[in-house]
Length: 164
Length: 118
Image 1: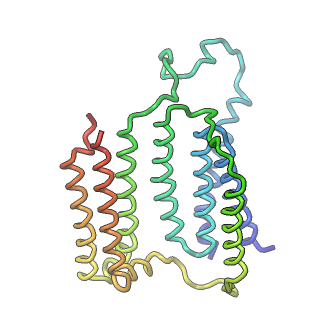
Image 2: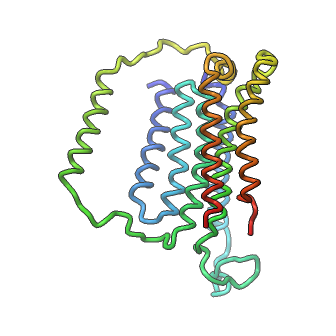
Image 3: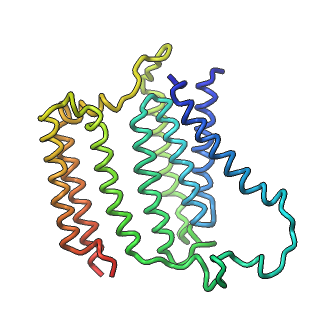
């Protein structure tokens, strides 16, 4: 087993382990903090995929932004500890069908996809400048459209903030 | 290629070790003569009142929500800034349009008073 493989399994273990704590913890605060390690593990996996900019973005937006938002959200809730998270309704048959279809789709993707395996290590170092160039040349329109999408988000947030 | 992440791994490792050592060293080496006063929650020398897990104002959530939007904006700006000189004036105007669109939103926020605290 190579060093890269070991690092991959460490990050995968961190991601899955903390994700399980998120789901199974009875305390919402523990869940929210555990989510930080899930995001961190995913960022590590991005690094292993040579997507360094994506990894930093993951940390900046998910850990720095969305997680903070979630913790604020938790702090807004009335009861934090020992909340009965699961709803009373137990619909086994619809749940089995939905989960089964989802699992089938995932397995289909997993088996049908032609996974590109790169031999050796590529000489590409740093994707940031390539993304920068692509953003204002080839992907100019999506870039500006994303600006409009962000504008909509700002307006919606400001609108909700003032609507008491 | 992974060798370039060695400093990052070092920072991660040092912070992890420091966190574990710092929190456990006082437990390991410190004398234990507890009394009710010591066992109570430390609140800057004051007697703690109420629970710490109280509900917070929704304003924190609103500020965090607006923060994420501008956080994403920075993410778009960074790769552009890295290639700023190569992209020249076209890239500059391009980014100005992007920031201009978001400035409309910023103006809306200020006008709406979403950043005001009371």
